[in-house]
Image (cartoon, rainbow, N blue to C red; front, side):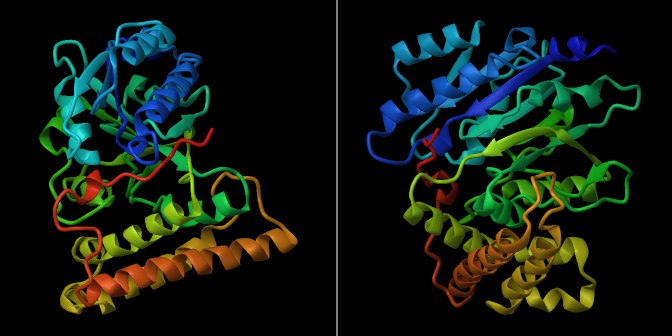
Length: 340
């Protein structure tokens, strides 16, 4: 099968949940979405070659929708969701709006990410092979500066898999599924969890024997929150998520004799974060970003230690019963991601 034939049977689902935050959110959401669509319109695999483009939103006005379609140079299906709809529910809703008769593959992207110009082509290319995978995970990173490089080692690590060219995990902002695979598995509800659903789905797919092909050249850059306060809040919430993620990690990767850590209060999550810290430090300068040298490398290490410490505080607080992300609709919370 040729790549253009794959594209002609592919839907792109784009949610705008991560553009909800900040003052004057509606106007800034419209501007940020239009900036992204203009970038996507310049992809080497044009949006016009796709079977369908779906955008979920909780209140874009008609003028914005019209401008988005003009920039996309193609029809766009806008799907209205409630303001309390979570990030992963929005993706499930967007998937449900795709046309099963026309779309054999579904690509998921985020409105707060800035893809490279060959991102879409590289993400779809593996599906054109004779041994086409069921899932393709692209590579996500933050900006290629000291802060972004340090944070990438924490938030966007890719762990090896027993299958050649595969990864054990993926991120919901940069992934493509064969339709029936996502239809069968999809994102499941996790009470009180902010952004760990894709990690849990990755473990479920691994348990089901479904390899995740890793396409490192399908790269997108995730924006950082607009303010330092929101960046700090993000770290805290990710630390809180570790508490809920720990039982899934233990079941997937650790022998039965260590399962007691799932009910150990803050001990299990802190063990997970200490292990992650080791991976992060080893991953520095090994994630396809410009390497840090000398003083910049030392600063990168210090930033990894500092960011990880905030995550650990969040995990410790959750472990002793301080659940600050909320028990319902936790993943509907929004930070502000509007910086160019």
